[in-house]
Length: 420
Image (cartoon, rainbow, N blue to C red; front, side, top):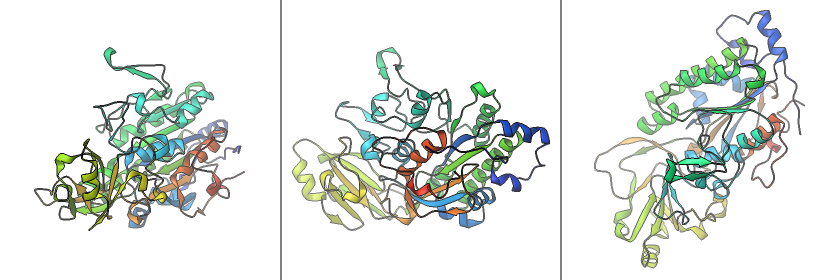
């Protein structure tokens, strides 16, 4: 287990913050405060966005800290990858195999991004639960699954009351209407607490870049505006931390990238097989398909092969490199689109453009961001691409937790990037 000594500056970015230097009293406080670990997710942020000249804060954090392109897990969707980042397991093992999914144990029920029933999440313990059990106080300003009473049971007859579950000591229910400024304010307020109630591990989530990429495309003015807005919020965060003398190891990630899409780049399933023969559990860059009883063979004959701009497999035959298809929640048939194409039930009635993710995890457009900066990290370290399963082992090191057992990830990529 590595242990890290706090350094005087809270973050190397402090030198470039556009605010007066912290007074001597604040610096003295910083020397007495133990470093905190802050995991920041910028949903849908591709690493090449740093090359657009829109991110002075994030680019400086990367230049003076550690950075690398990161490979997401398949499927390159929001909920599966956020759960991987805090568990160290691929979706096929942790059970959140899509933003939408079904489970034979809950017939007639569908998991969506609003689902908080622990039944769907309980297979693997997230890092905030591990930390809380070790006596480390945690707080989450949004993260998929963070509002779930992990390990508990939901009683739907009693207003969805959850009994026996564990949550972070502090957490807020996700609401897109909560602004980026308000999210940063929440983290700063937690850091102002007395040491006994101050969290040592915090998550912070921004969705603006992903939303703009979906709506207008990754190369749009709207996407660029969102990139600049989130960068400014990171500047606020590090400046406020420095002002109160709080050392912080800030680990900034994204869950996946974003590819441009268009309404004329669509594979329409109804033109290949009758929609009455199957349910489309989830559609978009890939389609998760469940044939209706008695129509399995017909659906397989029509779908399971290579098509123009799409390939379909039975779940048992999904290529091993995806590390996907053994979990019972994976639909019987997976149809994966060529990057930039969509698999939908029918052709859209109007031409649209925008962006999406969920494609092959090795597609360049799906690469994810990784930047780390703080007293635990060496300056100017550039790492080779690594899988996002390695983030959870790194967080364990930063928090002083023992290595996880049976994880898909390892802290090996960070061996030379951490101060000893």
